[in-house]
Amino acid sequence: MRNLLIGALFLSLAGSIWGGMFIAVRLSVFVIPPVPLVWMRYGTALIGLSALMVLTHASWHIDRKDRGLLLLSALSGQVLSIVTQETGTMMTSAQTGSVITAATPAFMVVFAWLLLHEKLTAGRVVSVLLAMSGVLFIVFDPDQFAPGVWGGVSLLVAAVTWAFMSVLLKFLSGYSVFTVTFYSLLIAFLTLTPYGLYWLLTAADYRAMAEPSVWGSVLYLGFFSTIAGFCLWNKGLLYMDASIAGLFMFFQPVVGTFLGWLLLGEPITMFFWIGFLLIAAGVALALRGGNTTAEEKLARQR
Image (cartoon, rainbow, N blue to C red; front, side):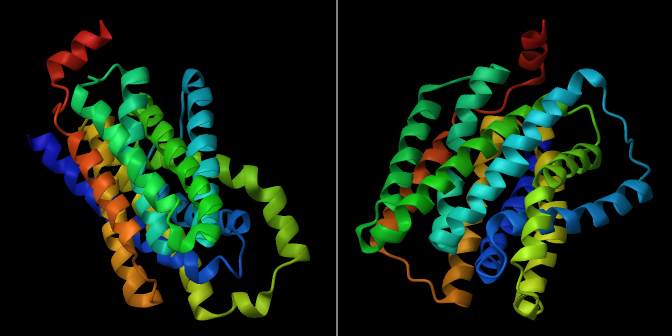
């Protein structure tokens, strides 16, 4: 029970921080496109994270056998997931972005069963179906059908790839959270650097980028959403099953929806709430199987 409480604290804080992230993206993504925005976000985060690594005397070492796994998790989660997430948010709204990506827990149930051999109960299977139904309600909302479809598909890809990365991180739990996060961000930053530099040199509007709402959003995305959010998420994953940990992604839509309505005046339709409730029911059902006990984890390793 103590592990669940500690994990819940870390994961709920991460989910809440990421709820605000969708507002920051909406304020900046029309000035800085998704790929350069992610690149600048990670560059900012790497500065702060490097300082944290030095101050906490975290190890810089990753065993050779784990480097391929780290590379796969970084490319799936830090590159593909975040780029599609910010692209989808640009094409839809802060609420839609936060709610569709909250379907991540349902996909974590599947990946945790396939890769970690966590228990796949009937309740967790139903949770996947409910969450998927909720995503479809939001993506195909007739009140905003034209701009929402491809943005919704992009956000769905973001949810699946983030779930995949979160499960892969369970295999790297022997390393410091700072170490795993640092190398994941470094891989993503280097991957995006060619296009990021090209955009910066050929298409950037420096006057628009100087607006406080834009550079302030980049700082929030770098220091809070990336450093604090990723480290809290990675740490929380150490304390509970991946399929249960995913529930705390649900803090994203709660915070994102409220801030989108409060700060951006984004409307909330009935289809949005139907999808929201279906996803809520789906992720709640993912808890019914309970956390894997220490004895069960030991038995799985034998």
